[in-house]
Length: 224
Image (spheres, rainbow, N blue to C red):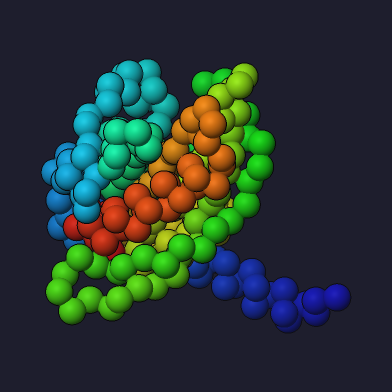
């Protein structure tokens, strides 16, 4: 059992953290410059993209994003494509926080069938001389609606980190608010339909290949 002095130290630490958070919350967040998501290339390493239909005002009001894109990318006409959604939040202090796809997809009729994690090696940056690869752990979910199946990969991208776990993402948001006066973050989601006659593994390989092509470009548009 925790002793009385230990409890006092814990309470004092919480009060101090809250005081620091409130002090910094009174000042505008200092965000580094970033390029709008709209200028993310439509042609990425052999993938050709097209703009999907914009989200409705009602959905945008629920999401609370400050910037987003919704696109489809295709590499080979007969191999199927992938859907890309990126939602960026410049600040999460006023109640506009990132929504997990697992909370949103059921509203569109999709139900998770299998979920887990996947580690993917990615190139850190598209700049010459950047490190070759680094591993990132992201979420992997298979969703179903009737006879339709899709493979979903997604992650949360915030200050200096890639996070799969939604709850740890929120913890890091609080820590970044205290330490850096920043709560900016983004959700990146890639969906690969499992077409007739195709295995889930084939759809997953397509989604992974796209993530590996996309990732080096994200540093210009998302928190770093």
